[in-house]
Figure 1: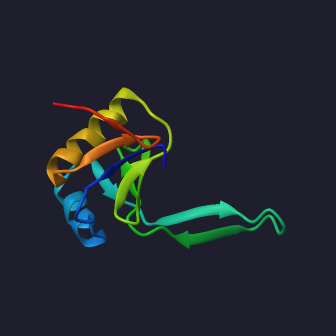
Figure 2: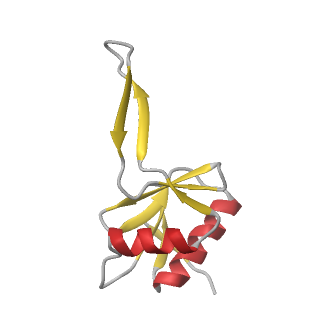
Figure 3: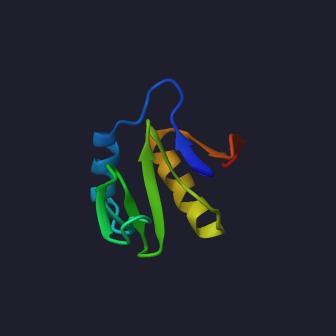
Length: 101
C-alpha cells in the first residue's frame, strides 16, 4: 500500500473496518478478487478480506490493521483522511505521515 491509515497503539480490527464500511454510502465491500492464471490462462477467484470499492473507482484494502490503497489522488487522499479521523488514526504516504487538521 502506498498510502494508508494506521491507528497507533490500537490496531483497527477487520470487524471495526467492516462496520465502518456499512455506515459509509461511498464504500462497498467487495471481498472477491478475480485474476488470470498466467500458466493456464483460466480465470481465478480469490478472497480479499476487507477489500472495499470507493465510488466504483478506487480499491481500498485492509491489511494487518492498516487501511489503504496503491496510488494517490486528491480524492482518495481526502477519503483516507476522513477514515483516519473516524478511527483517530494517522495517514501515511510511503511511510511518511501526512499532516492534516
